Image 1 (spheres, rainbow, N blue to C red):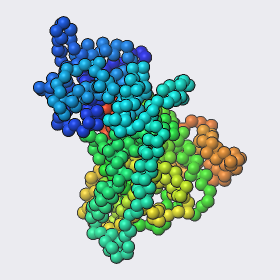
Image 2 (cartoon, rainbow, N blue to C red; image 1 turned 45 degrees about the horizontal axis):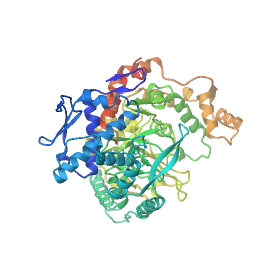
Image 3 (cartoon, rainbow, N blue to C red; image 1 turned 45 degrees about the vertical axis):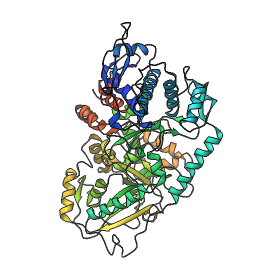
Image 4 (cartoon, one colour; image 1 turned 135 degrees about the vertical axis):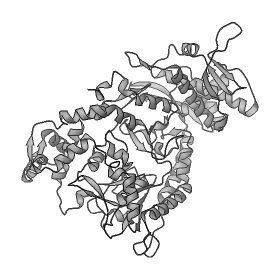
Length: 599
């Protein structure tokens, strides 16, 4: 891979093939062509009668597309940056149209980039996939094809590019089509929200008086219920089959959909992470895949009533001492190289990615008292927590050896679980994969709980009891390397645990943390906050919380291996996804970003 001084990536021969192939395969999936009938892509040369090389040749006999890389690149010599992938997309979609004709009617026509039908199809699909109109877009023909072949009635309107502050043409559904689409999804949305789980009553298997024999049996029961719910949820089934993302105003790139974690990703593991663009911040997050999940889970070695977050387990009404620790923690995180890289952003191929750091979520995972409860999309993780307890002093998990019943929770994910709702005080929050390992290793989600509320009573919540089995506990404990997979060794762990267990260090607060507290409490006087902290024994000092020199040296010594492991289960929902992942893995080799990995 080579990178110019302007940051425009030059693709290798194999990367060129992968990008072209990715777009072709995306269109073939739209045509419902079976994967075994997809053509293979290879570097090759085919000569025309005049002695010139063709950029692309379709070898129908051997199910191949031969690409003459030098000639192919000449086609895009004027296209750089954000325009280049659109040209690859155009050509890939056109190729798919030719291949579709071959698989359906046996047409073996030679590829021709000027073929009108394939051009119109390619531009039509590009619109649905979130691409803008460009000077080559045959607008009137595209509108006709969207209606006749894609069954979507659209129109050309004038929009505003909010970044460039210029007018531009936009193809979007007509008002009547918008109403049709909106009504369809509203119906499915309401059906999803109004469905309720079967309640477990006392005496049923899984109730306190009739617990499961062990945690494996309890987990198997939940898995069975979950798959039954998922298979009969029409909202989720239609999301899995979505061929385009319409946000109510325009067609957008699929990874900008809030539902992207529900999309099936070919070749991805059940517990992978999906790149998702947030609509509110224009930043990205790494969401645990929920393609095969209707529930989130929580495990506890004992049942607590009420079930509350750590912040509300003590009988107090003012939480300034806990909140200020979270702000101090946030100030520390902002000095870490990877946090800075995520927030400053980095370029992959033709897009710049700014990732949102979930400071509240990380606070929850690193010893702080917060108003959040942990949930997970990984049942094995929930089972681990269901058979262990945490020893704060020793900073480790220990096998539960008591006589009480364990409990496994399952939380029914609704269409609005990740959205604020006037009818409830709580919202599910994705923490997912962050620059530190715990949340990703735990496939983490959070739910905020109000002070006087009980998680046990939420309508989406069900739980089953089980008897502890020492043999199964031993197996699960070993499966997670005695807890090291849940809580791996890293500089944030040792640094913050040391602080939270030293009363003198713990009582020292930076002015930067105080400023963050002011920002979150604009209606509370600064003097009141300072006085409350001083009454709790805190000392406020002007300094920047930071990792020690030795801690950063420890990070840099292992940063390259950490990054490879970090990227291993990340997926982009895009035809370019595999290629973008390769570039993500190779980010430390990019001169622009080496500072985040190499001292």
